[in-house]
Amino acid sequence: MVAEYTKNQKIRQRVRIRFCKLGDLRLIGHRDLARLLERMFRRAGLRLSMSEGFHPKPRISFPSALAVGFEGHNEVMELELAENWTPRSLLQRLDEFCPPGIAFGSIEVCPPGSKKAQVRSLTYEIPVDSRHRRELPDRIRRLMVSESCFVERSRDQKPIDLRPRLESLSLLDDVLLMSILASAEATPGPREVLAALELPPIEAYAAKNGVYPRRTTVELKA
Image (cartoon, rainbow, N blue to C red; front, side):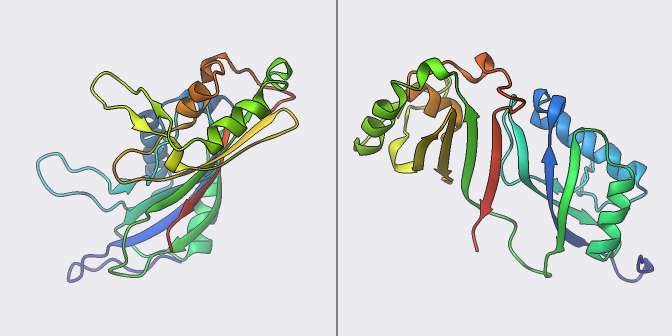
């Protein structure tokens, strides 16, 4: 199951893991999620590859952090191990120590020397109140036909043009569907899209028929 670790050769196996963050875990931030997963990996007895320096840390990376308040139904993380595992064996081990709200979908071993995961696009589904349903189609249409739509961010960040990064936007029944293209400079989030549509901030959204705001897909570049 696990290859022998030798002193003569330092093993660094990088694996790409698809997982879900569900239920009450949507209320924890990215750093808390990273700490939760690190503790779980250690409880599972995994030998983690550590960074160099005075304060070594496990080599765990997320190509796109998930905002507080959102469930994640197809998230991505990469983990470096100091031992070799097969995807099947590693998935079985993680399932044994999986905390409530986390579910693992698939694992793939990254070839040596391959690039880290890069995000192409992010897809979200947000249940909206039926009282907004009448005005939303017109607001969506105006936004999608506009050449630009600048939105404010935090005080230390410049406004960004949302429109070039908004790949698709539609309303299906009472669910707002959006796909956002990633950018190396600044990737807008669903909060900016809600603001552009004159909708309440994400904190105002409660579960609708048991469905929370969620990120359904993290699509990676080939």
